[in-house]
Length: 140
Image 1: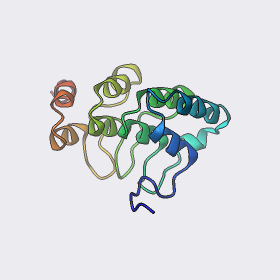
Image 2: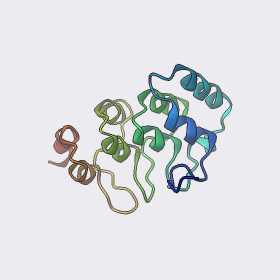
Image 3: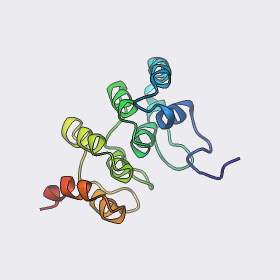
């Protein structure tokens, strides 16, 4: 069994958010089906890594899953000890997800997680120069 905290104590929504990549039509259909019957609280449930399903989708670079979760009511402004959806998008290097969260969903480019890490710090730490360029104007 893996020691990856992302895989431990994971809900079905977390697993699908991680695996439902844009090219995985069947997984996206399954995610849609599960979301159709999911209660709002399930959208914000934390896994052992202290991530919501939306944070997981952003961390694994799954734009379609992230969009589906937000459309169903997942909070793009949530913050935990291990990140925010914006920080997870930066960490994954997916500019499309970062811009979706900032420009279409009103997420904050400066919101820190509960450990004090900002999106700009993560962009610098992860050597994500495109994310630095996207985030920098919000810090001036």
